[in-house]
Length: 182
Image 1 (cartoon, rainbow, N blue to C red):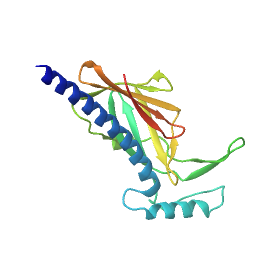
Image 2 (cartoon, rainbow, N blue to C red):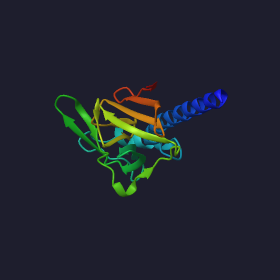
Image 3 (spheres, rainbow, N blue to C red):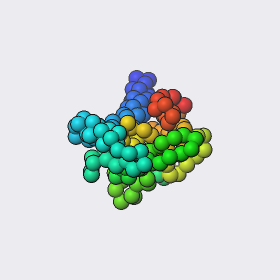
């Protein structure tokens, strides 16, 4: 009986670790798609060339050459989405030229991510505050993150067992992520 309990603990921990790693991987994949496109790396050069060769007042990229990619969290559900890059650059007196272009995604074009049926999302916190609805997206050409928060913490759990939880903490300012057992 002791070995069965040990195996079950190991299995729960492993499933949680895999789910946490999968979530981090999905975030990295969305950023990569914004930079290189989903098919090949040629799009990066096309996008960057188009954006750098135009007057700073009006910046556009080749039609259909760039998209924003991101993840959303809503009511315990997680998914991915893409939106068209609006291709604009705005002047800010304090920051200089800044890109503005992803906007909010259309709820009709979201795709739920598959996570193990035994893993549930317990909470999502943006800058320490519980949120029910949160989105983060990456914009071309450099995969810059567009988000209203500087830190995102997602707590996942094995079914109803509060003894088996992981918190995935995304530092949205530098792109690093870490997983903590809680």
